[in-house]
Length: 64
Image (cartoon, rainbow, N blue to C red; front, side, top):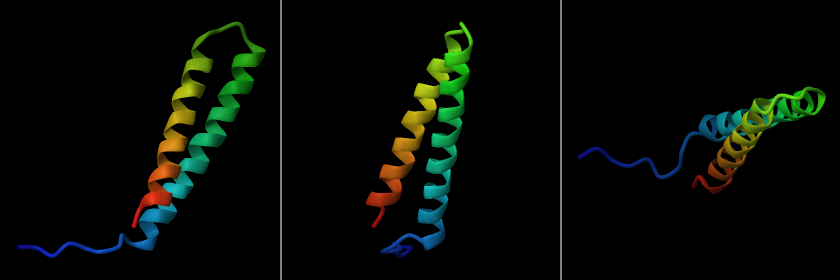
């Protein structure tokens, strides 16, 4: 039986933080794009990217 790793690598946690920051930045850009145009899809994309950022941040903070 393979042994379980008790703690994830620090690079995993750092990668999740970087992903969360990237998703949040892209969501902010999409929000500004949605505000400057009359299209509906940038707002939906911004919401999806914000949800991904929150998920990555939560995974990074709760990873033990």
